[in-house]
Image 1 (cartoon, rainbow, N blue to C red):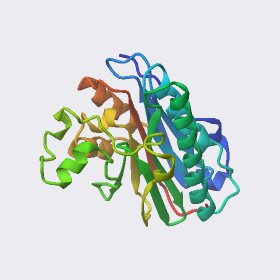
Image 2 (image 1 turned 60 degrees about the vertical axis):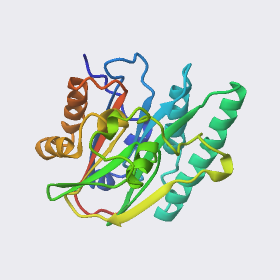
Image 3 (image 1 turned 120 degrees about the vertical axis):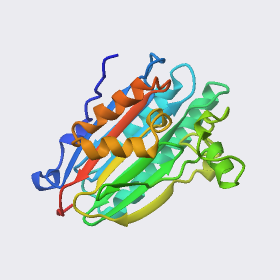
Image 4 (image 1 turned 90 degrees about the horizontal axis):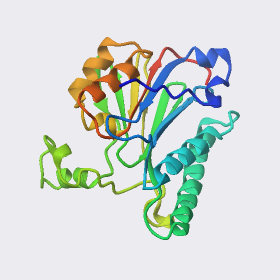
Length: 263
């Protein structure tokens, strides 16, 4: 099955040369082995130090719409904002998108129009990760992979409660049920979870949808990330997911921190 590269959006071409040299990032998205439609989207904004993936949900093209609206909201963030202003803009624009998707669902008279999102923001020696749903962020440092995000899903809640074990949880009959999303739940209750941390030169981040994380475990992801360049890694990861007959759309964005910069 051929790989379908989704080109970076216009935002990827903006920014000063010194900012571009601070990061190296590549992304790839594929509809998977079963679905004809790709409801995933990704964003690359090295000009503001922002990357994201989104996984849409809903029938009759609603998933396409949801992930595209999430990506569009992030693509439209100006490149003149401070780190704090960028963080606030992400929250505001995704809250607005949440309300807009709920309105779309109401006009469709039922069903859902929603999307997961995971956003990575990098400024100087710090990063922030914001997310809703089960799209994930990982960080590899000195060859060790750690998961940055925690899934907003029914399965994760069952694991936390000790009702099921993490091993084999992807085969749970309700493994696809998420508990938080852009467009899901009451407008007033929309909330992005956030974690922050320190950066180091050589750090590598992976953002991915569950079409990847449900068929490759952390050890398998780490094997690919250790052995491939940032340019090679997304294609390698997608190929591994396809070889395991992932039934979902699959998207991977890999970003390397090359050094300190003025961003």
